[in-house]
Amino acid sequence: MPDLLEPPHLLQTPQLQETPWVVVGLDNGGTCNNATVLTESGDFLVDRLVENPSRVNDGPDIAVVSLAASFETILDLTGTPRSSVRAIGLDTPGPASADGVISSKGATNFSEAGWHGFDFRSALEAYTGVPVVYNNDGNAAALYAHYQYFGDDAPHRSSVAAIVGTGLGGGVVEAGRVVKGAAGMAGELGHVHIPMEGLLAEGQPVPSCNCGFSADGESVASLSAIENNLLPYWLTRYPGHPLANLDRRTAARKVRGLAEQGDPLALEIFQQQAMAIGRLFTIASNFTDPNAYFVGGGVVETTSEFREWFLARVRANTALRGEQIDVAHFAVVPDLDMAGARGAAIAARTIVIGDGA
Image (cartoon, rainbow, N blue to C red; front, side, top):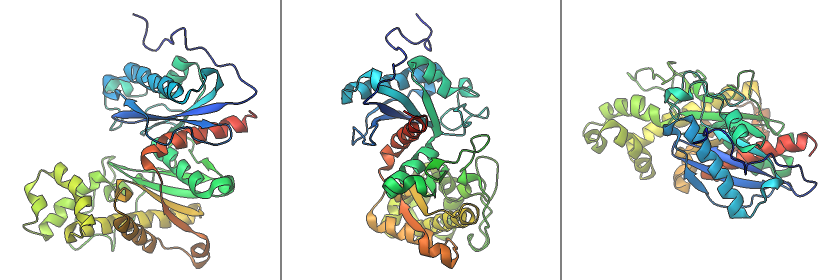
């Protein structure tokens, strides 16, 4: 049996074509890969999720093969000749370097030892024979939100995005491009320390993060924060609450649904999360002074009423100067289930165009 990372004979390096050309976006997740195709002119060829199992728990070799299969599937689905693919945009959960090397400390989705220090970008590039442009998933979603919101003006605008999930991801976009930083760790809003005075209730412990920090954004604004920090405290303030009868993880996943129904305990939790994100945006406003602030993740994948309630509280807790208020925009990340793949594709297309394609 050949080495799983040795590209099959049918995977040849594409020949550059005059016109037309496309890029493929691949979003790697803990359960599934999602794929899309973006044309030279900036049009997406699919308007829905196109998924296959990511198999990351089976280790890097199997995961690369599965990701390559996702690449081939999207080409077949869209009738795209392989020779027209100029580049692949790849995004994965972090932490990872700017070049797509998974952190040696591992991550939630890459806990198996074989992933530690694995060069995911280079492995996919070697297997497919197609140049691969890497971003982490928070950056990719941030980039998609930026381009979707600003359209043709995106290369002349800046934004910051907070993506609330199991952890708290994010991204900073300047002049239409993701700010990655020297080690690829820029835009990690979840691990920025925020002031807790006025955010925590009386007697509420200072929250801790999975990364080892205390009082950072992720320690409040994430599903992990609800499970480990916020829910345990608020259950002491609401004795007899139905969530007290559930195991902590199950209870944490039910909080958003209760908040949509106006449950007081759940609303206290999301009020704190909105305040935390607002404080992160306040910090960002003094570093990058962006045109727009985006919120994404499960916290806004909800009813329009709750989404508007939450976004309004984020805005109210973002302390901007008068000049900034006049020009700042607040919005949600659109199409979040497709935002990663689409943002990855946009990043690849931007590089191709910049290289003079």
